[in-house]
Length: 187
Image 1 (cartoon, one colour):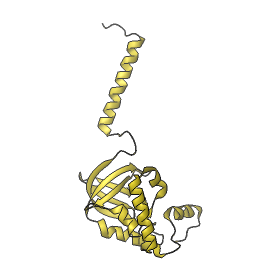
Image 2 (cartoon, helix red, strand yellow):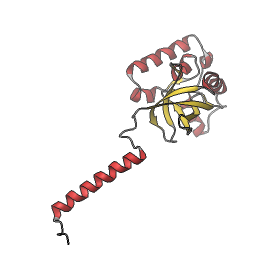
Image 3 (spheres, one colour):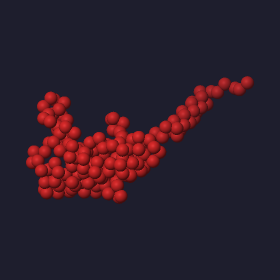
């Protein structure tokens, strides 16, 4: 019935089909073109797992796990871990927040900045001495102005010996995790 397409026509047909399939997949699954694509929404915090991780219900009623961007709080079993978690609970648990997603981590959590009434909660955790500025990550991904602001807040919290900085030998969470993997961490 139809004439058999030549090689050039077949190639064009395959390219068109591939483009249509790709477009359909992107439209259906919402795949973004990069890990730093920004997504913002509101939600209500239903649980604070630790000083830098929360669970919330988004505006569509879906549960989301959020790892707070650019900060690293003490682990729960670590010195100041519970205090960091409690400070975050007091600030946002049960409250409506604005989430600004900057990435997704290896555990499929959204990595995000959280705001409540316009206040940057991630920054507040650092400024109040409840978390470290996660420099190794922030150097690559955090806007320069924010990076400087977070660094200044950490230096000020340390100088004033706020929160975890009361302990002159405060152990950074990334060091704690590394020692724990090696079997050397102290609780």
